[in-house]
Amino acid sequence: MSRNSRGAIIASTLLLAAMLISACRQPYSTPPAATNTPIDPNSFFSTPIPSQPTSMQDVEHMTTQTAAAAIVTPTPGAGTPANTPAAGATVTATAIINLPATATATQAVAIAPTSTAVPSGSRPATYVLKPGEFPYCIARRFNVDPDELLRLSGLSAAQADSLSAGTVLTIPQSGSFPGDRSWHDHPATFTVGVTYDTNTVYGVACYYGDIEPSVIAQHNGISVDATLSAGQTLNIP
Image 1 (cartoon, rainbow, N blue to C red):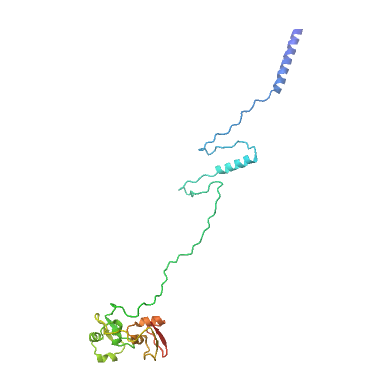
Image 2 (tube, rainbow, N blue to C red):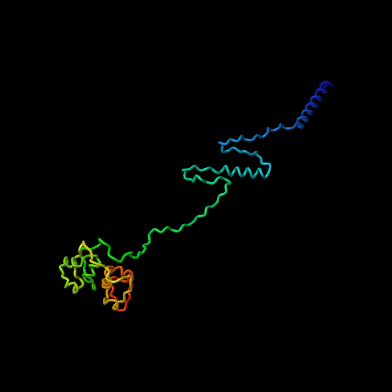
């Protein structure tokens, strides 16, 4: 081998070695700079923070954003209430007040009679005498002429004091009682067997003339058909 050929091989070898050494020291290519994804308010998957968190605050922010993205605002009318609280909102519980049940029935109020006399225009066509009653008593009660009452009933004045309970009287529909309808004054207290000889509420009503027997019974809390005892006291309105 000639000296010139040997020198060319050595030079080639050195050049190749120099290139290999130079390649080992050359740095890698610089990676491209990271860019954030543009925020699109209409995009569900956009992210407004860097892809790599640099602090605990960034990590917390990323967690909040991830939770918010998982909440889908319900559409009214789709079966889910439209007033679902937004993420992070404070929900205050509303106290439920149990109102008392409203009464469904009107209570009956007992009202005392404002008048003890039989009102005008309330005359029955006929009336059956009760124990202790007589025609003049009925004429006072219904404010009719006693003579007309007897005439319509086919009775005479002589028969008036001897009629028994059960006798049917025909009540005039016109005219009025001649004089004061009240035979005795009231309000008063009535003592059975002392004030007047009767043992029925009907007889007590006849003693006063213009008062209804039912009013006396109601005022004393007894039945209108009750049998009274001697010495029993009644309050007459």
